[in-house]
Image (cartoon, rainbow, N blue to C red; front, side, top):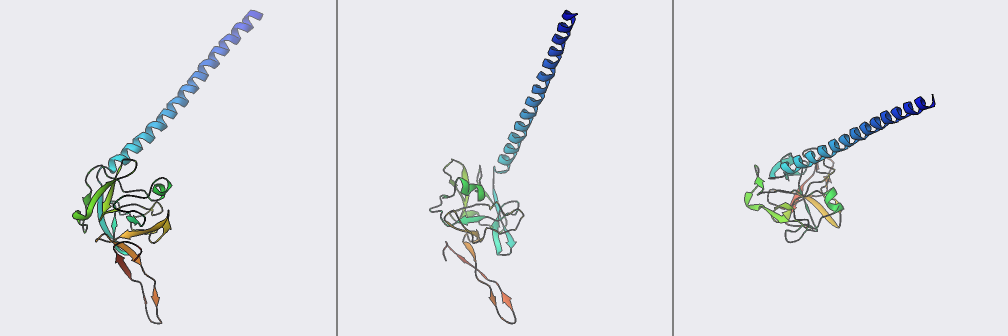
Length: 191
């Protein structure tokens, strides 16, 4: 009797071992699936950045430069000589507009003002009138301008006009009969 019990325990252990092996295999397959999914997403994002298109769009600030999907593009007041001063955590909040080939000018944009600049990590950032271009991570929908006039990472951020100058919102003037808002442009902040 004792022998049968021991033998039966061996079979149970083998079955448990097989079940454990299958569970490990399933977990490994799931992990590899997640890695594959993330890699495919990264490749897809890279493919969309192969050639950047810069266009104009009407916003609450007037006509400003935008990406192909309509998101506002900004300049950073700390950038100098066409080189980005925004990296690390700055670039997480203000992702640079990257391109793997010559950027394309959309309607209303001067192709002669488009260019590129090498970033410290070796990627190629799109420039306009020698200003490196950035998105703002808080702008979730096309045409939003939540980054306009913000001071972050040591300088101000401004949307750009078709001339490649900062769009600066001026103060609102209110009278008893009307209310107006005006925008001015300048070559580089502060105006």
